[in-house]
Image 1 (tube, helix red, strand yellow):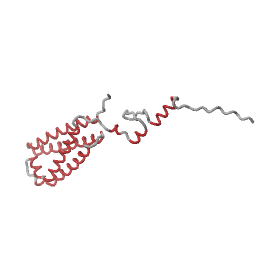
Image 2 (cartoon, one colour):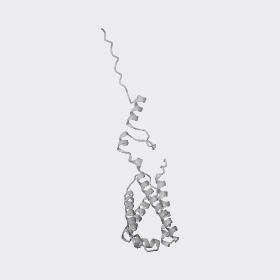
Image 3 (cartoon, helix red, strand yellow):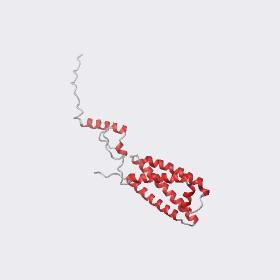
Image 4 (tube, helix red, strand yellow):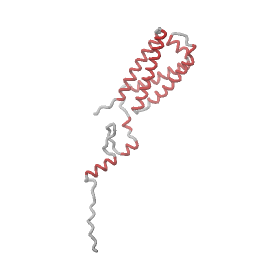
Length: 189
């Protein structure tokens, strides 16, 4: 039996073959888009993490607001722990001897929130900064509602409480502003 001659081996040039090049690029992840529309350079950057995806373009004044918030939470928390009676009397213009334990617990909660605020100051990830701003907004909203209900119940509006309510409303607005500014998609340049 005569053997059939084998055809000569043809070397495939994947660089010139368009389909092969597209398959190779897809496997490597080069030029592919993710859910956010960002183009990854390689699968390695996808596996290791694309830090630029999570970082944000900071709105003007965000870090200053974070410092102010962290200081405010810390100072009020320490004041509530050390001088609970004095803090209550300053805000509500009445004897606070029966509320010392509650004010101290309030101070401990504020110090816990201040710890979160201090750590968020060093974060560049958009999600973490947004969550701290949302936490701050929620805290001030709850405080505003509870204090308003208490003042309506008492039927009096002491000067300290009215100043406190005004500042809380202002803090709510500022925190919401930064929350939405951080969440905005950056403009293409």
